[in-house]
Every structure is written in C-alpha cells, then in structure tokens.
Image (cartoon, rainbow, N blue to C red):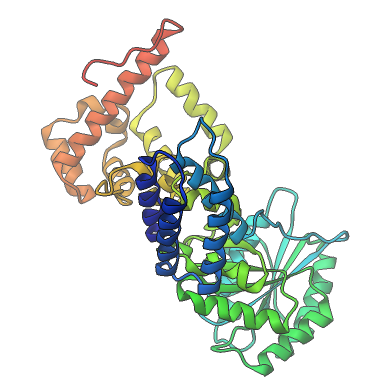
Length: 439
C-alpha cells in the first residue's frame, strides 16, 4: 500500500537533509519531484497541481526553526498537505438517535461489496451490540447465500425475503431489525457490471423508502482513477455519505485514495486491507499520511494489537515469563496472535523508522507460518522441553514441517536466547539489565 510513493518521497527527503536551508531553488526542485512521484502514483492531475502549489506556498512562507533541518521542515509541510488532501480527520459512521442505524452499501460488481458488508458488520459487532445483515442483491447468482454464510462466520443476524422487490426487502429488513432490537442494519444492495440508470433508480428508491443514516459506496482501490470516476458518478445521483476503498493492500501506488476526497468531496470512511473478515480499518487521514511518509502509525498499531490480543491470555503469558515457564507452545500462541494483526509488511509500515531500513532488507511474510509449522511438528514433550530435541528429532521435525534442519536449529537457538534474556531481566530486579553473552 503506497509502497512506490512512500519510497520516492522518503528518498526525496533524504536528499533535502543535506541542504543548509530551504531556498526558493531547492523548494522548486523538491516540489517538482513530489509532483512527479504523485503522478507516477496515479494521482489525479488536478489534485497533484493543487497539492504542489500548496506545498510551494507553505514552504516559501515557512519560518525554518533552528531545532529542525530543512528536510524535516519540508516533511512537516508535505505531511500537513497529505492529511488535508486525504480528508484531514477521521469521519466515523453517523449513529441514529433511535436504533437501528441503517447503513446502505452500494457499488459495482467485483469491488468486494458483499464481503465488505460482512467486514463492516464484524467491526461494529461489539459486546452488547447487535448487527443485522440484509440481503438485497436479488440479481447476482448466489449473492444471498454468500451473505448468509458470511453472517454466520461473523456471528451477526441475517435477513432475507423471498421476493425480487428490492425496496420491499429493505423496508421489511428495517422492520425486522426493530423487532430484533438490532443496533445496526446493513443493507447489501445489488452491484452491476457498469453504472446504468435502472440501477441508480433502484438505489434511489431504496434510499427514499428506508432513509438510511449512511450510504456507503464500495470501490476497488486497484482500479486507480476508475475508482475515483465511479465515485464521482455515484455521488452525482445518490446522496453518498462516504466511501469504503477495498484492496488497498494490493495497490502499491494508492493514487485513488489520494484523489478521491479532492475530486468527489466524499470522505473515505474505511479501507480494506486483505481478505480476512477483520481486514477492515477505519480511515484516519493523518495516520495514513504518516505511513506514506515512512513515519509509522503507532496509534494504529496499538489499536490493532488491542483488537486481537486477549487480555486474560496476555496476563497468563506475562505470569509465565515472570516464572520462567514460557514454552515453545506459548511462543506458537503468540505467533498466531501476531498473524491476526496482518502481514509483517503491514505491521512494519506502522513502526516509525521502518522505512529507513535498507531497501534490500526483505520482510518475509511467511516466516511466522514456518515457525508455526516447525512448532506444530513437535511433540507436546518437545515443546515443553526443547533441550531433548536431538539430531534425529530435528530431522523428523524439519520433514514434518516442510522446512530444513537449519531452520529448526535457528528457531531453537533463538528460543534459547530469548529464554536467557527473560531470565536475565527477571533476575536483574533493579540492578540494571545486562545483555546475555553471545549477543
């Protein structure tokens, strides 16, 4: 996500670091490089033109503080403008004063609309909250069945009606949501292969009948400026309240996300970052701007960790570390929790300074899976007492996990070292932590 743009911009800022001060010449030179980077990222030309004009104006009028370098000053200016272009602030869903809050979801086929409805339901399904998904796509084969399966996976209510009258389905779903005391009702309306007038008329009729509190358009981020054009056309005919942009994890350029707010005036409310049902994030422009510039997103990382780590389990793990009884089985459980947070590349992008790592430092997203496989191929006794794993056992574990003996050796060595560090930390008790020998 934004990999190409991020790489170019961070390279530009490194070039500026050596400058003595921000002058008109180096501002012009830097802004032209920013312009080129944005255009190569498939950002709308008018958006790029306005963006570059804004940063030039701010940079030329900026008072460079003694405490920061010209490069840092320019980063600050670009960061502020990126945030403004993306929408300045997060815009959460509007909630009804009297439940249920009705969310109407629309979009073209292939954008991931139905799956996104389920992801949205999962994100809203908090303790004490009830969410209902309603199948209003009567045209696409198996669309209703797909939504019903997804609703079971998410653990939310599901509603369908044996009729092809979409307005009737949505109105009945609204009444049913009231009966079931649902807090949220999500209407999965039909997608089309292209925008046509009958489709728009049907969506207008649904909007008029149920008066949804939110009308969200799902667009495929990988389609670039086509996604922006689709959003513009929809917003001309429907009273859209926001956009959900999917498949951003597969888009290295990200030009659609940077263009959408400026072109349509509609905020991006959520972004899809994978196929899993928890791979939907609320969109925060300022945090996204930080990630694009390689500054990380610590708040987002903490929120992601809090959403996947079980507090009771974390307390148990802490107790095991304190008592020095942390085993490979515990280590495997931790790996599974980390995997729920997303790919290693996603996590690294949220860590400040990660962008400064050497470009040839590959992030192996399959490393955690290999570690899991190795531990999974061990017997319960081997996980508890890894010191009994001799040469023949290592060969068996490597064969069973589809890895090499060298990888098994590496994991066992790393685990042994981590145990030494834990023991050193527990035994220090205020005497000052010393790194164990061999580090």
